[in-house]
Length: 158
Figure 1 (tube, rainbow, N blue to C red):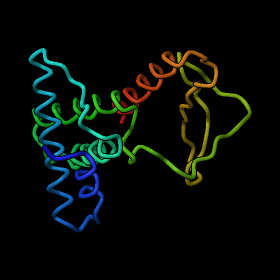
Figure 2: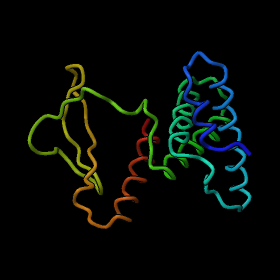
Figure 3: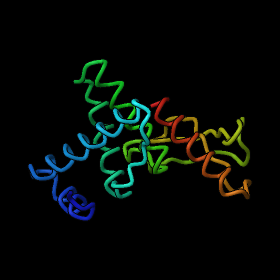
Figure 4: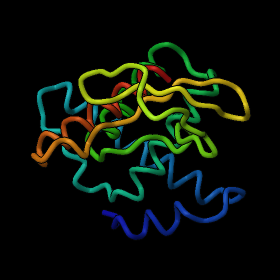
């Protein structure tokens, strides 16, 4: 069995390398096998997957989903795996992270169960921002649950 550190090392070489694609494909194959095993009432832990490799795998899955070049069955499987890894490791695809966004005003315009809605701008265009309210929750388990819910919602609304 290959160690996680070996996978991470080969998965982080420059994007022009075929070795990276092979390693990501191996991670994807193994993760899909574990997801299928879970559907047969087996445990789904991904203990073999290091957080850095999980981030690379989630990013790869999102790029596959964004390409639109997969059939409906594969799309559901890839999206399900992406959602599970997002919950398990509390991560999101880096393509969902937006930089250079500006929040406007001193108060949110609305709020929900775990986040506030703010007005903002991105490249001088008006946008809506959903900002987590983690600082109000003292219980670590509750904060983890909020993060998981937020990650799930971000992937669904993508």
